Structure formats: C-alpha cells, structure tokens
Amino acid sequence: MTETILQAHPSASNLAKEYTEGQSFDWKSVEQVFTWSETSRVNMAYECVDRHVEAGKGSHQALHYIGDEGAITYTYQELQDEIGRWSNVLRQHGVKKGDFVFVFLPKHPLGYVAMLAAIRMGAVVGPLFEAFMEEAVRDRINDCEGEFLITNQSFMDRVDTAHIPSLRKIFLTDEKVESGEISIVSEAQEASPEADVTWVELDDGLNIHYTSGSTGKPKGVIHAHRAMIQQYQTGRWVLDLKEDDVYWCTAHPGWVTGTVYGVFAPLLNGVTIVIHGGRFSAEAWYEVIEQTKVTVWYSAPTAFRMLQAAGESVQSPYDLSSLRHILSVGEPLNPEVIHWGYRTIGLRIHDTWWMTETGAQLIANVPTRVVKPGSMGRPIPGIQAAVLDDEGSELPPGETGHLAIRTSWPSIMKEIWKNEEKYLSYFPYGDGWYIAGDLAYIDEDGYVFFQGRSDDMINSSGERIGPFEVESKLIEHEAVKEAGVIGKPDAVRGEIVKAFIALNDGYPETPELLEDIRLFVRGKLAAHAAPREIEVIDELPKTQISGKVLRRELKKRE
Ligand code: PRX
Image (cartoon, rainbow, N blue to C red; front, top):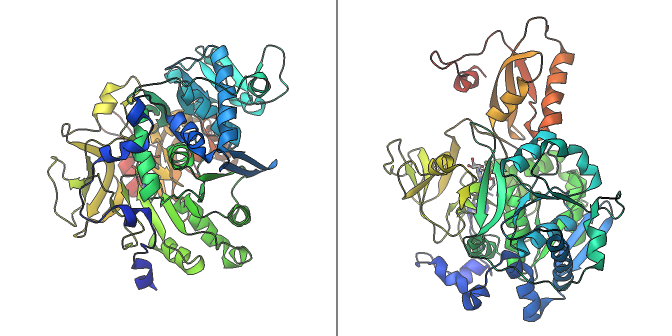
C-alpha cells in the first residue's frame, strides 16, 4: 500500500499544466492575474470579491455556511453588496485607512463580511480566535491600541472595555441592541451596497495576527496586501483550486490558516468556501463534506487523528466521494495518518509547512510529486530552503539544523508591531536567510523533514502556545509560587501543555486546587493554553545566574 501512497497523482492539477519541474519561476509572472497590474490600484478585498463580479461571475457561490442556524449562502454578488454596505457603515463611524479593526466573531459568514469590509476600506484587520478569553482579547487590542471592534453581544462578556482605553467604537452583529450601542447589521440594511474601494499600496498593512514565541507575550505580525500574490498562487498550485471547487478550510480566521487559506486564497481563486459553524465531532465533519460536496479539504493532523480515532464505523455511512484533494498544516503529520486517509478515503493527505510570519505556504507536498510519509514536502517553486548550522553555514543533506528560507518572497511579514528587535531576530545571519525556529533536515531529493523546534514554543493541536504566557498566568494564582511550562508529547494532540509548579506555603496539594489552577488559566487566556497536566514539585530547576526557570530540565524530567 505504501507504494501507492508514494505515487504522484498529477492528474489534471494546475501545477502539472502550468509548471515543469526545474523550470525557473518568478513571482512577478503572477501579477498579471490582478487588476492592479494594469490599474496600479491595490486592495485585497477588491481582488477577492469585486474582481470576480466584474468578470461576470457574480452568480457563482462564494460562501456556504452550515451551522446552528441551518445553511446560509452568499454568491459573489451578494458578498460584494454586503461588504459594500458594511464598509459604508464603518466609514460613517470614522474608520479610515490604516486603522486597526478587530473582529471577534464565531466561524460565520458575518465574520468574513466584517474582515473584508474593513480591508476594502483600507483598515488593518485583526481577527481574534473565537475561544479567546478576556485577557487574550485585551492584551492583543491594547498592544496595537486598536480603536474598533466588530463582535457580538454574547462575546462581549470577554471584552474588558474598562481596560482597553484605545477602543472607540464597538460594532455588534446583533439586530437588537441597547440604546447607545451600534448594530452593524441593522445599520447595514439601511446603507447603500455601492461603496468606494480605498486603494492602498502593495506594502500597506492588511492584517495583524498575534502569535506566540518562547518568550514574552504574543507579538503582532503584520502582513501587507502584496501577500495576495503568493496566497493566490499557492491556492492555485498547492490547494489546486479550480473555479468549481467547493473548498473547506477547517481553521477559524483567528489563526493565520483560517485567514490566509480560509478567506483570502480561496476567494482570490474564485471558488466556493464552506464554513462550518459548530464544534468538532467526527459525525458533524463528515456530514459537512457529504452535504456541501467538499472537493478540496485543508485541515490539521490533530483533527485527522481524532477522525481516525472515531473509527471507520463512524465514517462509513457518509458519502465522501466528492473529495479529490486533502491537505494538512500546523504540526507534524505522522505517516499513520497518511495511511489512514489513503485506506479509508482513497486519497493522499498533502502536508504543507509555513508560519504566521511567512504569510503563505513555503514547503509542501504537491499533486505532481511523490509523497514521502514523514516529510512536509519540498519548497514550492520560487522558494529556496536550506538547513543551517549554528554559525549559519549550510548543512549537507540528511543533517539536522535550523530550517532557513532564502529571502524574500511576496507574503513575508511586513513587520512585528512596534518590535523591530523581534523582527530582526528572524534574520540572525543577515538579510539572506529567514530562520523559522524549526529544526529539520533535507534529504537528497530536496524533501524537508521536520525535527522539532529550536526554542520552547509549544504546539498543541497545531496551535502555537508561548510557555511564558502560561507561566505568567499561573503565578498570578494565589497558590502558585513558581511555574515552568513545557509541551509534553501526546499521541492525538502532538503535544499537550504541561505545567510544573511549586506551591506557596499554606496551600497543600489537592486535586481540587490543581483543577482550580487549571480553570484559572483557562478562564483568563483560552482553553487551548490551559495546562492539561499539572505536576507539583518542591522547587523548579533554574539557572544559577539569572534564576530563570530551565524548561529544558523539565523536559528531560518528563
Ligand atoms: O513549528 C512549525 C509548526 O507550526 C509553526 C508555525 O505556527 P503558526 O505560526 O501558528 O502557523 C501554523 C500554520 C501555518 C512552525 O514554526 N508547523 C507548521 N506547519 C507544520 C509544522 N510543523 C510540522 N509540520 C508542518 N507541516
């Protein structure tokens, strides 16, 4: 069976038709797709929606939502009209080019409309993950002094307005609001669908995603409109999107995958996007595929492992025959999962590698090439990868070192908000190489094998968690004297968050206390950041000089 999985399935893929292995490729050649290549007038939202309507594809379905409210659909024309109405409302309330507009909404078409309306008027959109708790929301908006927020009444419980002084206006997606509140949906009903696009420069800010590292609080990674070049092209070559595709990316736009490959790449390619509003369950997910006839599906290893664990008896009643291409991202895709996908669905799962900072896929398994289970694939055309030693010299095939990408590419981040030092830390060997923070080796055929992180960042279910953020929260609990947090290997989630803590005098260790500590972190940050395991020890290992907690020692102990 392995042999079959390894075989390439070039079939009718876009890549097979448009690119021959070894051919040189220049990102400039992609520019002609966009209206701005002729008009010089740039805007991501225009290219995602208006361009298709102007090309006569207004009746093509853009969004297909399935959730608690049943199904909701939008054609490209309807989406354009709704975005126009919303951007008129935003403009009336003072939103202007360059402003930060945060969007804190569930997976729902209104979240898509909100993001695109803000972008269409030149604002920088900040999508927030729907499960963020009060402090996660507050820290992000405060960091860049965001002035505008689009959310709903039920999420307002987690918006600590008293401690976000920069917030000027909050737009609610509920129809009924209290006096003094703004219902963006009601005001949009009265507004004209015709709205001017705010034209920007290719290098102007498009979106901000906060992302964790091993130190400090999450940093604001800002991307520019130029990212659309690579987001479009990877949608075409890696996702292999064609106009009639029904495409489902399972990530929430609060994560970079949910924005780039949940909103931008599919719309730039003019396909139909599926949005699933509910929680994960194997039955619900299979039902989404069957009902909406998903053809291209982008998800993550933990989700695939959970589907695998649910068993084939759960899967077999569903008709999954619409699927033709499956992809994965965010954490190591173990070979067992590729075998499961091939055995039960009859398709290879194509791993892809990129990061919030890179703005789009850089390394991927593509339809035209052999998949080597365990490898993330090869650098896509236009991208050069290498593995470097600690001094920045290239290592030969098979040797593990720092995964590096030759600069630059169209979707690379524009900046880290107000943190030049952090931005420069990605280029420790000078301008020529971007250093990902991942350890990897590259084999003789150019396939990249992920080997872990070079820092303490935790990856649980594909979500990036900074140990510092969790440790800081833990020691705010009255019982906790000190804390060290690591990722502990886990068969389903890749890693889980594990905390080692020392308790203050007078707080004996009890299961109730540990649960209270866990809920404390969960209630303030987000469920995915709360430690799944807490172990009490007398004293944490620390460096002699600075007294910093030695997470590596904790890892060894684990
Ligand atoms: O460690 C790598 C891991 O996720 C990190 C980036 O996380 P984030 O910025 O949240 O973006 C996730 C999705 C784009 C990377 O530094 N990672 C990403 N893709 C893979 C991966 N690890 C192993 N295999 C992958 N395919």
